[in-house]
Image 1 (tube, helix red, strand yellow):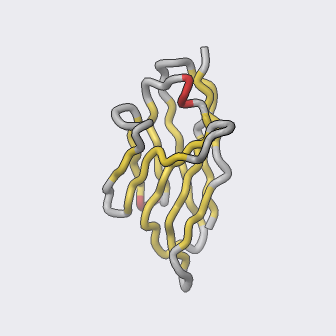
Image 2 (spheres, rainbow, N blue to C red):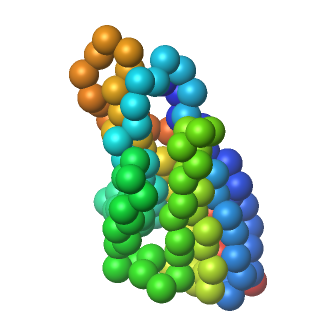
Amino acid sequence: VQVVESGGGLVQPGGSLRLSCAASGTIFTIYSMDWYRQAPGNQRDLVARITSTGTTNYGDNAKGRFTISRDNAKNTAYLQMSSLRPDDTAVYYCKLFAMEVGATPTDYWGQGTQVTVSS
């Protein structure tokens, strides 16, 4: 299973950005798709999660500003971020909890995409 994030970049405070996470490979089912973020010197924190049924959870750092969505047909998740602040600056990672054909459910991580919020 391959996980590829895209959409990161430099944005001014108060701006918006949409991240995408595309999964490919011999996927039988994806149970959940998560976004995490990690700033230098910090631990990796959960930003948002969406399950196969569309149930969502958000970290305190994202509530009211970020929205996670998912296109099951495309095995893709999105993170719409608005009202961005400098402390949102981090590498954003996508994680799948998924099962390949003939295998057991496993976590799969992408390589991350850098988001920088600065004027």
